[in-house]
Image (cartoon, rainbow, N blue to C red; front, side):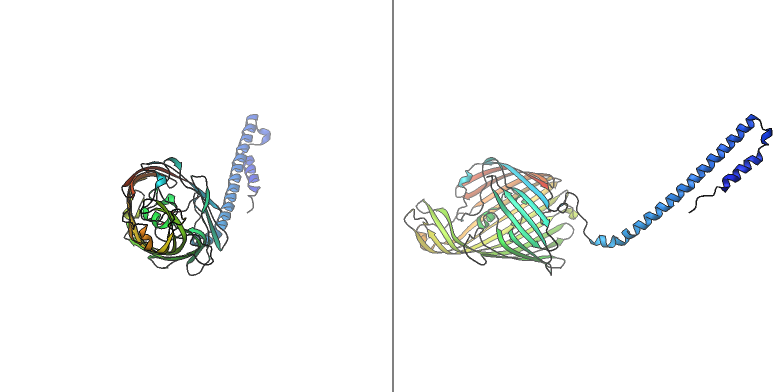
Length: 465
């Protein structure tokens, strides 16, 4: 666009001169007046010229913006199909995503925790209430990232109060499998049951139920391969299978090739209206123990070293129901959770393994034992929850064979009561107070009081249902 011509300026000047008297007749005052008129005309014209030039620039700028917006509008449908990136606090904000969970507690126990045992059940794994007084609890350092277009990886390192470091989980996930399959390989918490796959800081109580301690040594981990499949239907329906080395209790490490343990499970669930949701499942574990040795009091009242070698089978039925008014769990919600365990073991049982009593004997052995727990947690206002849990174990039927001459079949039913209240000001922190009575030995009651804190640092993924 061309700038306005200078011709109007000359026209205005000529017009001004024609309207004024001849210069030779003009006085000094008239000359001053003419000059003032010329100055005003010049300033007026310059102002109009600048206004036109500014309009031209604005028009050109608007046209450029519209041209730039057109490709973005064309790409909008494609962008909508791609999941939006999470906020800076989300698990995908970094590559890798790094987080830490810090835990500590105070424990007041009326019984010596070093003497903890569950009468009638073989000890294994990490069981018991832990030490008295102030202490760190297990802390975690987690690193997660997408490796490439085919794999993702997760590493969770456990830092124990005893200043030891262990690999809690270290697995890869193949993300390009067909038909909705999700293969996982490495070390991972098994998907059997409901609580087993959850990390301890996500539990609703400070410790695992007695059934988990008695039948799985607290929590069952696998070194091996897992495959899950979720059906492409409206109702949640999941199937899973695992094979592993079988080192974790109730199995034990064995120097052999091949598969040491197998796990299968199925979970289903869904919504009932806008306020209710549920999940139920069945799981089955088969593994094998070799020289699983421990100490047991015999009929003579002596601590005898005993050992078991054979098959161990564990079945679990789990159920969870959640209530949140109109699906909004922000203010109030309720969660009911229960699991039932059944275990059968068969093989060889050795009495006086180390020969300290001079009565070493090997005999056939079978046992069928059960256990369960029921717990409820109610959030009665934002940030605040209360909960109650009851645990019970049934020693069932134990056949020691010829070792019955030295060992008595258990008849005591271990049980425990627990109440808790916790305060959760955000998804990154929680403070919990828990009181309980534990009766895992006949005639012995352990009154327990715990105060716990949980702090989460960095990016951390959402917990499962």
